[in-house]
Image 1: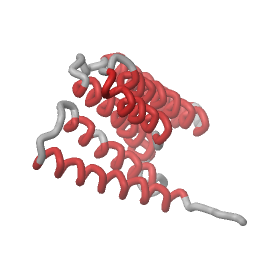
Image 2 (image 1 turned 30 degrees about the vertical axis):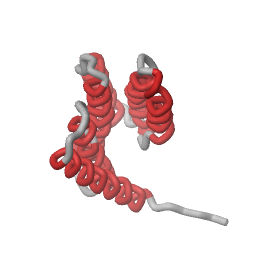
Image 3 (image 1 turned 180 degrees about the horizontal axis):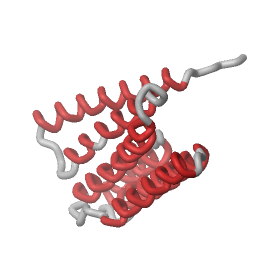
Image 4 (image 1 turned 90 degrees about the vertical axis):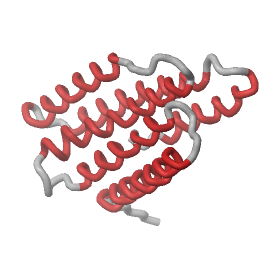
Length: 166
């Protein structure tokens, strides 16, 4: 059985789910008592949705928007997630290394878009960089937690590691 999925349809679904999740989380954040870091986690869904929207518009909008801006937004999303997790854990949450990595990543995107076009290198680069940040997110949940919270933190870390949609 052949099952073909259109990339634009997948992108629309990705954008829709991210926007709906952002709306639900925003409502909870503004109306309920939430934990520290929840606001950053909520806001992280917005660049995620916008990044996928710009990728979905590739060919209809300039490359600087559909490649450079889109991937920058997709990469800032897990950075905000990481900062929210660190804030939740009561630890310093600014990681300059992530922003340096983002600048390097965007430089690589400029090179492999306009100087020496190579989509495969761009895909691998964003995947590896995102995996590094998501891995740090999972690591922050897995280690240093109280014994009674350990199983729920490990579950959350596992879900982060398995369900990253980049």
